[in-house]
Amino acid sequence: MEKLKLATIWLDGCSGCHMSFLDIDERLLALSDRVELVFSPLVDTKDFPEDVDITLVEGALGTEEDLQKIRKIRERTKLLVAFGDCAVTANIPSMRNPFGREEVLKSLYVESDALNPQIPVQSLPELLPHALPLHHYVHVDVFLPGCPPAADTIYQVLSELIEGRIPDVNPLTRFGA
Image 1 (cartoon, rainbow, N blue to C red):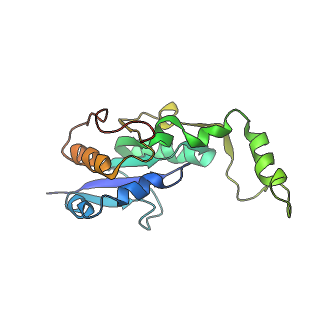
Image 2 (image 1 turned 180 degrees about the vertical axis):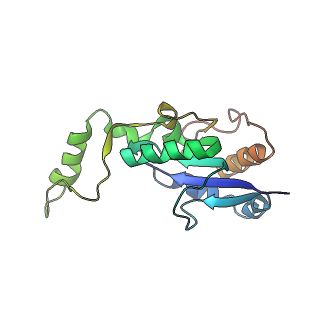
């Protein structure tokens, strides 16, 4: 049996969803019989591959770089899962939205840094005007809320997707849990 290609990616978030993914523990071995992890912060692949079957996307879209990544991922993925509250609603990253991009940068780099108060001009990704959930820019096939989603829920959702079924996540999870 050919394995499905699974990818995970971490955008503007805290990595809590990936930590919960790892909490699947020994069931990761069962998953490895059915999927090949082809891209993830957990592996060393540098470029997002073609023809990925399932991608779990953690985090909101906060930068132009995130936007370019998600468009490429969407083009190369059959089933895209908004993985966690930040991907589904923009959650914590969207707390900057009422203040505006320039005010956030000024507060972070000028007002909070007594030693070198300046906004960096190099190696700082360009912020989008607002942090937004994935579905504002790309089609999402499955929304998996939770902050983070529980390991049991992640395993159940992946198991259903691997079997070719779109899971009903409503009885499995809720926002913030």
